[in-house]
Length: 131
Image (cartoon, rainbow, N blue to C red; front, side):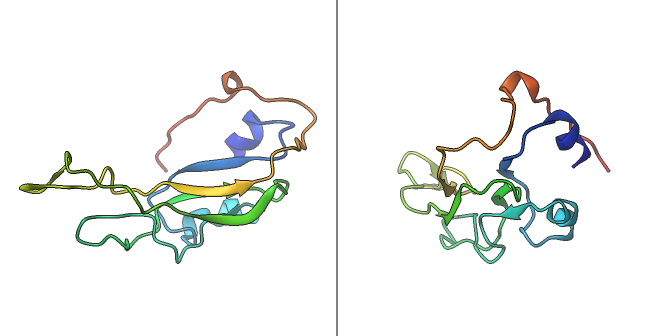
């Protein structure tokens, strides 16, 4: 959270998207929740997929929005259709899934920018830390 605050000064409406490898209710997100971030995909919604379990069993992928991001309509979900292909191996056969992660989405009303300054991609730097 310190890195986000330092890097995105002046930015109020923040959206963080990714494969977190943790359910949205994991304790690792306590700092984000304390800062007012909320997941668009509930922890009970599975975001993974496999041929053996097309309904999924884990919540790994999400879209997190902060309290100032008031453009989220409340509509979100997981795409499960069309994620296999006859050209993708499935063990010793064919018809595997494209990825073990399903695409996730959140509907945003994007006709409003709430911050005073624009932040561009060149302003954002990512740092991996082990802690």
